[in-house]
Length: 128
Image (cartoon, rainbow, N blue to C red; front, side, top):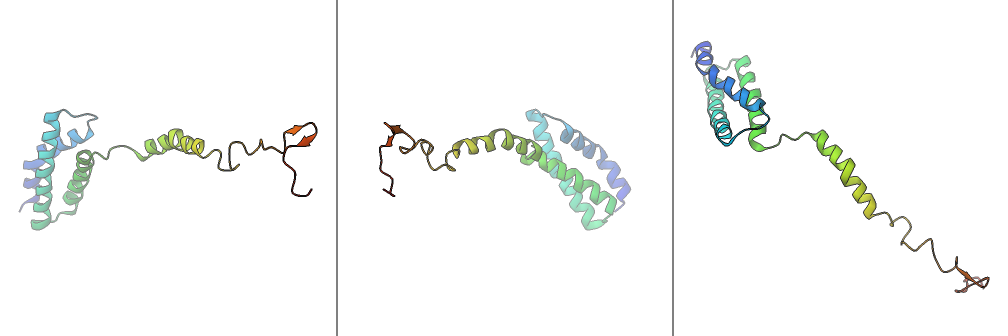
């Protein structure tokens, strides 16, 4: 198989797949087209690997398919965004929920021994 003619025939399809993966939003028809082009390009990669494994074409198609796979699986949120979300919402919420764990209870600092009635504590101390 002549790899140059194979690439020339399918170049328009690969270029269109690259354009769709670079778009921020896709319409329903474009999402269907992306799926169709992904499947066709995966077949092209299998053909190249089996008949004429040209490393440059194999790597180019592998990267293109990996980018399209991210779009198709919906994993296009960045880890930075999730980290910021955790630091802004998750961690403060968790710390708020456990704010009294260090002191034992919310009334730990206000126990009956610190409240003196007439100079004497209401509860006798264990030493007396």
